[in-house]
Amino acid sequence: MSVTPRCESVTVEHLPALRFTESARRLGAAARAAGLDVPAFRCPPRVPGAARTIRRYPGGTVVSVAVRGRPFEQVLVDMVEGVLVANRDEPARFDALRAVLRDGVADHDTAADGTRGVARAA
Image (cartoon, rainbow, N blue to C red):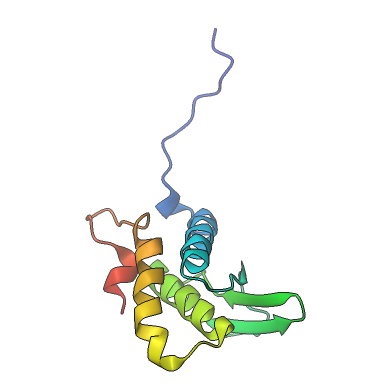
């Protein structure tokens, strides 16, 4: 008799909340490695109809992204852009930083066809 219940094989790509959480962790690690401040991530934004909002607080920044009803590639792009805006860096550095952040997320966000989501969504 088995004590462990039978479990279906479920991938993260079928669970948007888990994909969002894992992407936020990986994006945070990539931002930290690039010397950027890591904002907190949440979903959905408090502003109805907004795809992404940014709130600044004395202790840090919160990037809110809408996940429901959107392709996840767009969600990842909004998360990356949120990190850039939250850091108020020089616009001249945005392209290089954007590439570093996308690579940090794209390492794990590979679609079923083998393509990487955020790398395609530029």
